[in-house]
Image 1: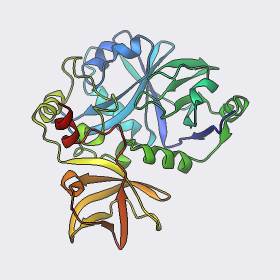
Image 2 (image 1 turned 180 degrees about the vertical axis):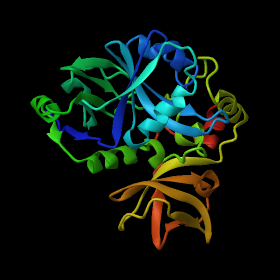
Image 3 (image 1 turned 90 degrees about the vertical axis):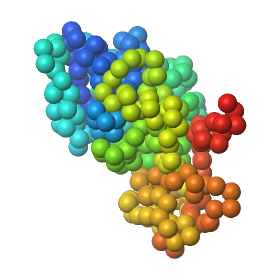
Length: 303
């Protein structure tokens, strides 16, 4: 079997959204179309401020009589509180659930190890839990939510090798995939700077949701000036929050960090032909723009 890995992601947690109105309730608030989840797929989505700024991101999937949100564990209570503000008379309730551990699996053809077709958001039950193809990017891997007590044994029996969360981070960062508030500044980040369009994290046809107006305006007016992008370097990892400099001026900021790589929120004009070297401290870093990223010049050239 190919070299396949799994890692727990203890910084991620689960919310079960239950009640007869759960689908309609979420549909009016989140950036993606909840009907995909009701049809049996997993989806990636965000919850925004009314001004269209980032508050939370999560994966959504169905299991039992609930729509589940895989979100940031430390910010889970805040997400429940934010959603509860809009509950009014809706028949919906939110439960933090810790019986299931959350993690990821990756490697060539990892979907086959779970009996999944390699199609975005495909879901299957596994024991008392669920696994699904990461809906953001083909080849990104599989997300799993399994009983914490036996998840390693279940995954090992499928032929996967245990790895560390930092190993998954290196894989994720190399693909340019954001991970919650580690990469997106709360109440400041906008979805289109962080790949939500290309990565299927929003639906342009679903109708209104909280923050939709600014997101659409930014898209149709082409107002993106920065992007979250991977960079590589041959030095000790920088600290998150460090400035990326070019010709003595800050042009970006470091977000997630891994061995030899990092995600940085970078001004797009810093990528222009003839622009100077990018530095973090005294270390030169090299942008590694993933193939899925549509930069403005690529969009205009193809359109």
